[in-house]
Image 1 (cartoon, rainbow, N blue to C red):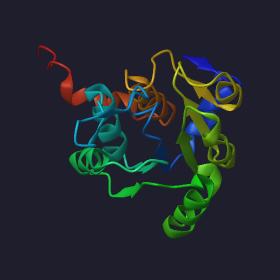
Image 2: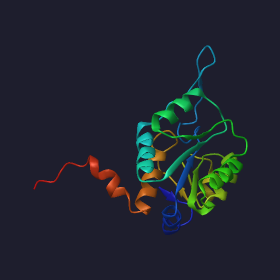
Image 3: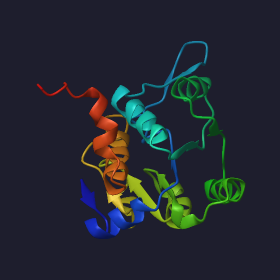
Length: 184
């Protein structure tokens, strides 16, 4: 992963997080839009990303989805991952984030957002921490606290989740249940 500022700065920002929100198209997916013959929108989600989101939640970090498009498959994916804070068809993501901060009684420096395109910059720069996939727009990468190696829908979200958990000293505990027991 590439760090927009410095790794120490990004870790310091991530250490404060109590809320992490994500865009969908280009972040939780590769940005491709598929439509069935009868007009149903279909998206492909990555299981690595999904497990990363679950690990964040289990570690006590609230997860939200704030996206400009609306698709039933996103509702299904959010429900599958236990994400209750789902905001679709949002024109002003920064305003939604600001309302969410009031509702959750947290400050902007305790919130993060992962986006991939210029429309995400207002909310990303509003938050204390921001991230973008490795294939996000170059201008977005310039302003992000963290840019991943992996692309959107291809494990980028998992990289960010593990970066946050590591910054907060929670990654080892999150991964421990999956490691083989040591011989006694």
